[in-house]
Length: 65
Figure 1 (tube, rainbow, N blue to C red):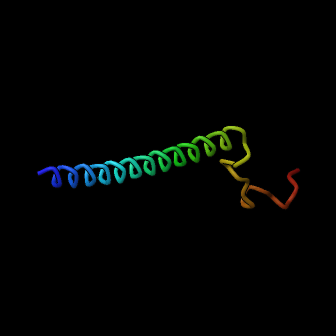
Figure 2: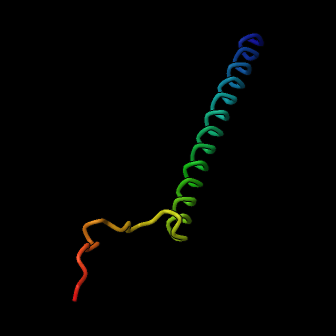
């Protein structure tokens, strides 16, 4: 009976460690995605990434009188 309890304790520690690592990986992934979104918003707001790029169709080559 003691041997089975010891085995159960080992297995439960392994499972707990597995899920702890899995949760840490998920949190890191969510933080990275959040940072990417924040950086994109900041770059769009500051104009580093242009929202409306000028097109060549709007430029007229003939002068207007």
